[in-house]
Every structure is written in structure tokens, then in C-alpha cells.
Image (cartoon, one colour):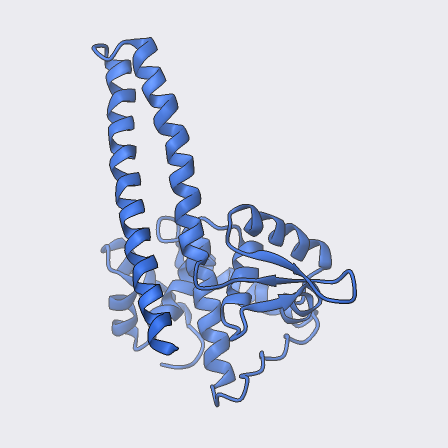
Length: 241
């Protein structure tokens, strides 16, 4: 029934839709469900290449049994007085987390990033994250270290103590692109060296040379996009003053 829990028949339809090569939106339309519901279902049950309806149904039963033994779910995050629907915010946060996981980010890191991203302040302490995510301080610490290394958040020391808070801002994806560009620079250099050592006229050397050319083009595009975004951001900020 649309809006309720997915049934075994729903999961059979999802599996059939994936086998046809349909996207989450089209499968959702057929079932009368949001695309985000389909994406969460598929992501948590093996992904689009390994989804099985019977296995997903059994996994859901198993998770339901485990939830009965767990502590109650974390309370919805406050809406800061903006009148948001807490359930809608929670559902969106889960969808955003699932998408980050689908893109290759480890689950705990994705949960921490999404939790920070949906806050208006873009700022939370370790204690805030532990409370909201119902995880251990060690899990938060590990996730924060990973995200900081990727340039996706920064630490700020709170005044008058040793406590820290973790911060994201409008430049989160800019820093991510910059980190990717720096990685590509290293790959370009080693690929050019490989082409030189192996010989550009040989199949192996040509492979390295071709890789270097592609990565150079990607980095050029990255830097053009980053500059355009900086200019756009500066214009928006000037308009608000």
C-alpha cells in the first residue's frame, strides 16, 4: 500500500524493474512510492547489481527483530524555528546518507556528513553527533578524522576549554574537488613518467600517456569550474551586503 511499508510483492516489482534497467524514479512511479524510498531499499540490500527480493524481505524481517532489542530511535533534530516537518527532514537525511554511501563513502562517514549538512549552523560537537546518531564517541572520532582528511569539514576549538566542534561550509565540495585535482596532478606526473620509461610508442607506454592526457583535461575542467563557482559565490555574497 503506497505510503506504508514495502511488501514482498513490492520487492519483487523492484527486482523486476532493476532487471529491466529502470531507474529509481520510474520504479517508484510504478509502485506509487518516492524515488528516495526505492533508493534506500536497494542500497541497504545489495545495491542495483545485487538486489534480490527474497533476500531483501528476509533482511527486513531480521532488522525488525533487531530493532525491538535496541534503544529507542534518536529524537528528530530541532528545526531551528523554521517550521519544518521533522519526519520529512529525517527521511531526506536518510536518503542523502544512502546516496553518499552509493557514491562510495563509508557508512559512518556518510552519516556524520549528512547530520552536519542538514543543520542550519553547519556545526556540531562530538557530543551532539553521538546523541543524534546513537553511536560511540570512537565512531564519531574515526569518521571526523576521515572527513577532515578529505577536506570535507574542519575542527574549531571552543573557547574556554578543550572541546571541539566540527564545521562544514559552502566550500565543502570545492575543497573536495581541489583534493581530487591534487590527486590527479600526482597521477599525471607518474603517468608521464611511466610513458617515458616504457616508451610512448609501446602499448604500455601509450596507455600511460593517454591516461595523463585525460587527467590533464579533467583537472583543467575542475579548475575552470572552481573559478566560476568562486566568482558566483562572491557575487551572491556582495548582493547580500
